[in-house]
Length: 535
Image 1 (cartoon, helix red, strand yellow):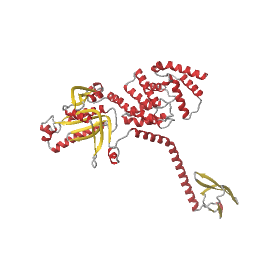
Image 2 (cartoon, rainbow, N blue to C red):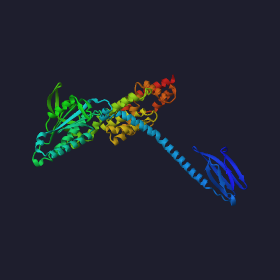
Image 3 (tube, rainbow, N blue to C red):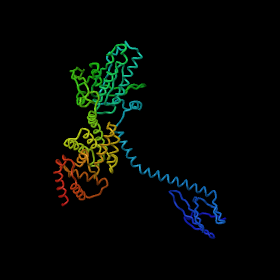
Image 4 (tube, one colour):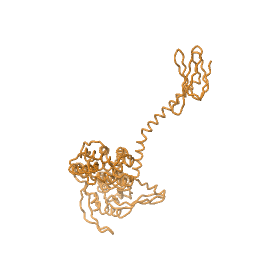
């Protein structure tokens, strides 16, 4: 029997006895040290493994046989565990590094979006002593009331009456939720809701009128179902009044919180309802001006309003024929929603431009809100000149608005961040999945060396590089030079001018409109750059 004692001093050593040769090597696996033990004789090679801290290993070398103790088997098991842990750590580290950057980007985008879409929690505001009221400049208020409800109460079974009233109001709740309208309260047979709060938007007049049409259609189809046996047809008819204007919203009460709105807008909407006719939707001249591109109306005349003079009144007769399914005026068609989306885009544009103005670093002299506005304007000019359809114009403007939002996250690969940003924010503004993907494709075309194929892609590509043919090319080019040198690209102004000259020499506009409007100026820019290079 031979006893082999290991020393921590050595990384490698040999031990020889008779015809047997031993070699011990120290290797490193991550933070663990393993000793590899080799036993060599004339019949072959046998390897054993044990921990660095081991002191003794007993080997029976009689009759050219090896007998490894139980301790050695434990060492083998420990090695297996160590290698497993090591491998797992490596795999986890690999995937963490692989997805960390993308995760961080998405997290930053979500943080940006949270500030873009504040939602008021009135209960928390009150409990924590926050602001109890909010002012809104444009809210559309709807009052609905059942005609002859007092008479209905006298003739119907109370339980049946409540069930039927609850069914109506339950359907109204579904309608207002569908259009993003806030239910305020019900008082007896009266139903009150408002569009444009708590999240402000420009589409609320159209959406509230749409909801009113749907409410009336429901009542006309279902109002007789419960009283037919009593021959009291005509009782369950609805009067609706609508007005648009400023309101104050807030929470009142201590133990039982109640959200409500106040202001002349509320009072006028109530007057519109009480001055209306059963089965009709009565609106003011203000709401009419905001919705006349979407609906047909019947003028009713003027009504005096306390401290306000007189206001015009209109009956809503239905959706405009070209904007409704089958021209019936009852349900909006795809063109209706595309035009409504153009109004919704105004809210998106206001939010994004405000974000770019406040959050883009000051040393980004070119890729800022000014450049974004220029691209949007140019997209509209080229789009109209090329005769693009309404939806294509909407998607072009949206892509132009969002194509540089990636700079809010990171300077490099900003297009990829812009795409992530678009996918996160556009569904919140009711862009369909197909529309979102179309916008993504347009943003991708703004990358360097991307060749546009479709007309919208050509328009956006030309709009993004419009400055190449503008009279202010030189100062704009200087801003771009200052920016790229600030963010890591080192070059002299002479090198920059040479690069610009080579780029413009090879560049060509894609749309006929851009060629006519900018090609001549672009040739002048080349001449200016050539003069600068020869100085």
